[in-house]
Length: 178
Image (cartoon, rainbow, N blue to C red; front, side, top):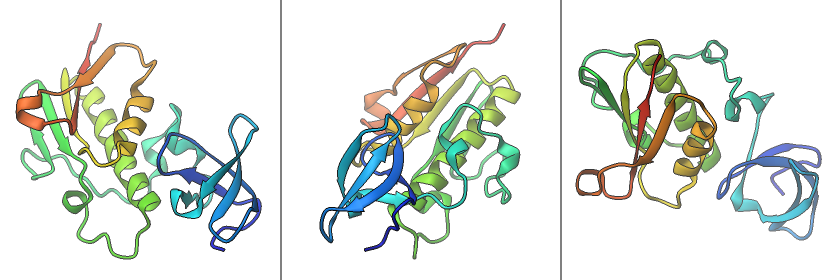
């Protein structure tokens, strides 16, 4: 048993999270989701949320809450490519960090989301018109989280990037300014 009763957890295979209520058996955890319903999850499909990270997946996310800056914005870094009116970021963990060792899937996902949101805010500050976010194909969790973040935001539209160049593993975001 890895999680404690009352612990906040995030879902790895879908958007959202909840609070651990009990264990059905040694592999199945019962979690109360954001809507108040108890749901069963395999323990391996959950990740711990340490501290109050509830702001990570909301529109109120403040870049200043992140203590460690891991991405700088120079002209060519390998993970971020800048052109005149468009930027591209590769969110594969092997590109973003020196090692993934000792990190759970949830921790890796949180790191990717923080880097994406940092990149997004910086692009907005610089009035960049087009972003290409390379998230990979995988199981689609990162893609779903990115699109959930973008949904409902005014002044932008997003869609699958050019299949010939990126396959199914990237999202293009067009930003519109007044």
